[in-house]
Length: 443
Image 1 (cartoon, helix red, strand yellow):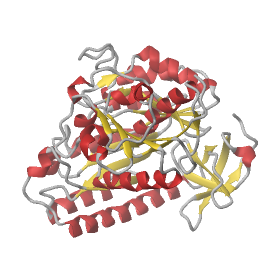
Image 2: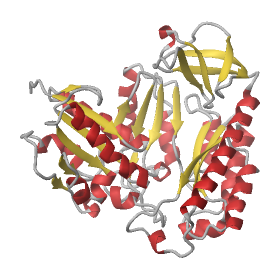
Image 3: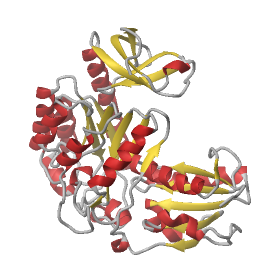
Image 4: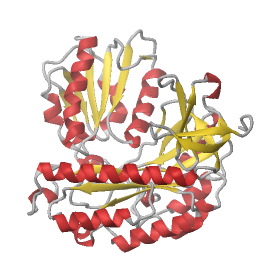
């Protein structure tokens, strides 16, 4: 198909959304559309939405206005989690022409024969229990890193979470297809893959459309470790109860998997974990951290934590704060609890005032700064390998070591997408690490 039409994409939310946006964008390009940046004039703007927090919902309206400023006659399409959860709400926003749900978003080209503006957004959204098939995706946001989707949906029933309502049941890509996608990524010269999904530790469930596990997450990791040409594979967020000791053992000796884990905690209080319907206690979490650090003392460990969940008294919050203070972790992702419709937590007693939530969030963000600084200081004097990224930020190029220490050096385009061994020397005023060169690029 030949067309002079231009299409632009904007992604809210997680790495999984980025992988799906990238795949949908390639579908447009394969049909002859010219992909442009979202800040440019386009005939079609596609916004991939998120609904994990109230903030992501609010940002959608701002992004719509931004697109219409570029082209008031542009055809606006909303896809993603918010589009599945609140299709009518999005369809009523001025300028939105088409809203596609969880399964329909992968067939977006079937819905855009006529690009005339609609008086009100047209909705095509399935019941979420119909979202029972798998669509593989991977994103290529720059030349250095790709997000590879291996799993979708979730069978967990955490009381604060809308994701099962937005994405459906847990289901997985076939092992064969994951490996094929990894090989395609490798062939494009990309040196790092980040595994992504809603609940990647549940990989293997629904691999061939049934409920049982055909493969385990460990088997996935072992298979990916054999793919040629990928220098680094990073495991994104994985539930602590699904991060098995055998997987940690394998990563510690892997040639491709890096010593970096991101493990959601959400609360250091067993009382609150139970109220959240999390599937572990704080003791299991501490055991996982200890196991990782015993085998890989230089490993980076990131933690998700929610503050202000109903019932989080001052004493309960301090229990989480102390638990995290004493844990050998590297940084925190702090989420301020926000009420989400159709979740159990909305009906719970012990609602925490917004001001208190924000104060606690600030405390934990401060703790995160201290943890990251301490982790970076522990790595000074070490020789590690940096993969440099492709953006010129105020005259500097940035990169990450295998264990996720962020470094910077004066901009040099020749460094983009190259791996260099360096010796970490000091931390600058921006909290980033400087280094000494060891030798020329090795990869």
